[in-house]
Amino acid sequence: MKTEPGEIPHMRSDAMRNRERILEAAEAAFSADGVSVPIDTVAERAGVGVGTVYRHFPTKEDLFEAIVMTRLEGLLALARDEATAELPGKALFSYLQEFARQASAKHDLFDAMGAAGIDFKTRCAEKLEEMKARIGILLSRAQAAGSVRQDTSVDELIGLVVGSCHAASLAGLDDDACRRMVGIVCDGMRVPAATYR
Amino acid sequence: MKTEPGEIPHMRSDAMRNRERILEAAEAAFSADGVSVPIDTVAERAGVGVGTVYRHFPTKEDLFEAIVMTRLEGLLALARDEATAELPGKALFSYLQEFARQASAKHDLFDAMGAAGIDFKTRCAEKLEEMKARIGILLSRAQAAGSVRQDTSVDELIGLVVGSCHAASLAGLDDDACRRMVGIVCDGMRVPAATYR
DNA sequence: CACTATACGGAACGCGCGTTCCGTTTGTCA
DNA sequence: TGACAAACGGAACGCGCGTTCCGTATAGTG
Image (tube, rainbow over all chains, first blue to last red; front, side, top):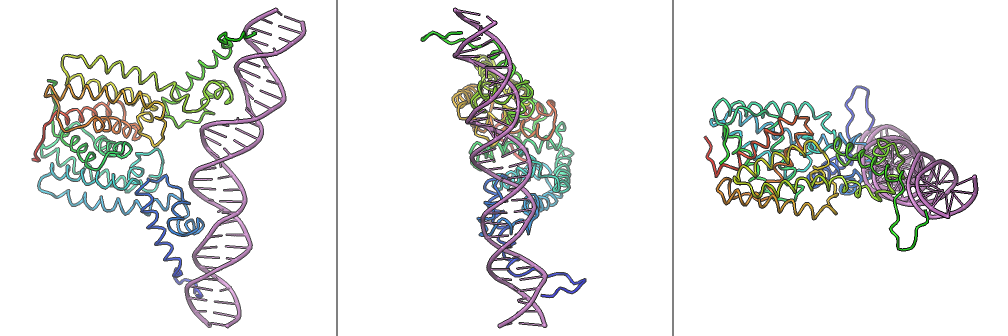
């Protein structure tokens, strides 16, 4: 194909196919093992050479972004929905549960949330900020409704949920355990104070 | 020194001094940055060559062990003490708080507890098992006293505390936040069930 | 002081992994 | 079908880090 100047260049058919395959392979690999999977593995799963991966995604981080962005989008959409729920407390808690469910199924989410030491968040930063803001809204509403304690910040809440689920998956606990753990966090959020007995 | 056969060989004075220095440097480095610090860094901090480090500790894991073992010892001793406290609920909660305090100050503890993906636990395994057993006792006593919910396992409880603190330190939250987070977990443990409101 | 077992320092090696390079293949259009 | 830009594959490179090796220094002894 001769590309006329000013014309938008079209992607070759095999290129499109490979791009798709790479995304699928990366999705699967990142879900299963987190961001630490070597690019070689992704390439192999996609039935493609490493060079090809790097032509489509110049950096491992770019590939990671492509995968995680859609995940974050989904969670953001859900957060927006929950923000208008009638029962703010219930909204917050069921959102956290859904968040935990997705995070324990897709290991890369942990890495995105900064649970691993890796600094992949660089370009996901704004999405993460929005995420935090959205959860902040859910939290504030629940607090305003008197459903949860006032002395907790978004960062702490996120840390509780993400950290616990991360630990759970590392310890080999199942989704059910994960749900119970988040349930404990939610219950703890409800209590205003407490005295030992 | 001529070493007579059967006689226990004595360590040379400079060797002893270096061993001590290496332990101190490793202690500091591991506390600050976790197990991921390169051996070269430890060697440099100790004012010693890498070769020297490896003569004293044939493997990075050996060095890690030497540091973490003492930490675990301390926590185990505390767990044994708390096991005879009059108020089992209070005992469990204050133990968890102390645990969290130490873990957030000494990053290597996270790695030891398996919070990082690294499999350093190999030889710490038995200590960790004992740890789990000890916390299990505290939990059982608190449950028997009716102070905490019945539907939680030791693994889940440990995951909640360790995971949360790990996330907190990665997110740059301070010790106070960490303490509040563990407080939420403890409060959540007290609640038998809960209905949304 | 001389002598040697012991210990030391740090260059070098192996390996995993991200990334690059380049010779070869292939899709597309005339 | 011929020609060429586009895309491919995978060997090779660089780097970080754990580990090893060996020539040099030194503590301890007689």
